[in-house]
Length: 571
Image (cartoon, rainbow, N blue to C red; front, side, top):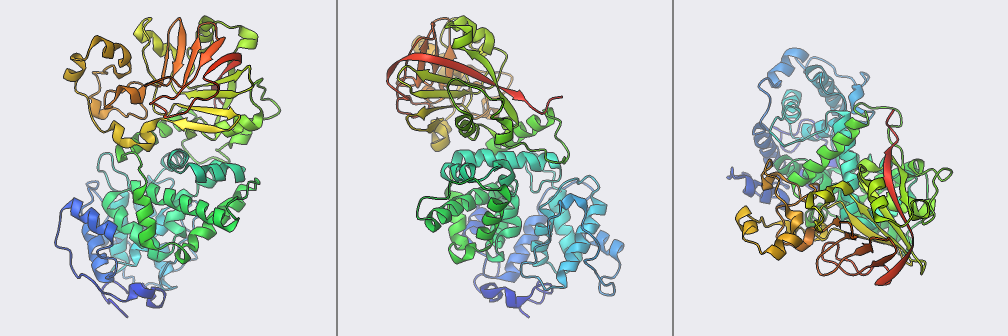
């Protein structure tokens, strides 16, 4: 047996190349940046004992609650484990949500040890209500533990982490469910082609994405997941999102290659798609190395950890407002159920087209039904009536059909009443969740340019710079109004209605309106300009969305509709 100190639970015949310890035998640094570099490069990946020692060092450094159960607590509770026979007959706690214990490279009898550790954790952490990742995390750490007690202590510290703004593992249904919604948002924005494939093939997209954590912690082969664990213990929860998005990208590539580049566009039961992704992830070693997986994961230009945390908190708040804080039967309602073709009626788009638009919107609104707020066919061609019907609703969906038969529109994140803050001057507002699109003749969405080029949001304008701006700049850059109650560094460019930390006024011109017109998108043109009679419009390229003209550059409006989002969970 290799590595006697840290291998008593390991079936070395299953470890493959990982059973051959080679490479460095110690890590001399305590610098976090250096640890991050080493983890990503796999510095300790070929030495089991060194990896175990590094894990111990990293986990001991986790800030924890004052009273956190340690190895001595486990020994007191369990007695002498050497004389006590463990059993897998004792069921796992309900909070693991039926997730099995992945054996990975453990000896068969070591699975019983994982059972025992988890059940002991359940007694010490009574506040855990939903933690489906716990079996995989415990199983992984047992590979690198001297005994059950040490593994128990390591998992306890991960559960008891109390560092502000840092999370390591979901422990409530609210946190878990919001993470699934957040993953859906990230997939929608950073994995567009794969997200489009899932929308086209799965009957319930959110149900498919509810497995995202299991892809990483459960389905990945040991050689891959242990490299993820290396980085996760250094960098935290964000790593799981990155790896899951990378897996989705590789899955889409696999499907396109297997089906001749076309992909199966026939909708199937979501369980079939989930099983297909699971099978792909379990067999990923045949096509994707651990290094290649991490390279893909860290090449994705995601928002910062702070931005992802804010998105997660926004999704949590949305769930709380809907009363979803504990697991309920069928708490998710997929986009098809939200868009009932028997009750949905639009003069511009079909239920199928609205379904496609629904797949683009942020996940927290996917539980909502479309609610017609305004239509020129009923309310007339008046901008004042447009405002009176739309104010008080957030977000809204603008749909336009031109006299040429083209269809385009915009998802607008912010209440139109916000325009009043600028008086009758055109003052831009809105958030980075806004986007514009066209449906006919071709279907295409154009998002905020900062999503694909995050460096555009990296610079911070100081208040002094703003105060010395020209009067012209003050008019056109009115979207950058200050919110003095919150320092600029605390604002999220993605979720804040007004932005003070963008290095270009043109990148955040989302929506604007006054008595004369409404505008969507700005900077060297407008994505949409509509006159006060809601009769004529213009479209062109703009910096905010980096879009081409959405239809003929000058067009006449045949019909205009505005849809709101009705909460289907409200009693």
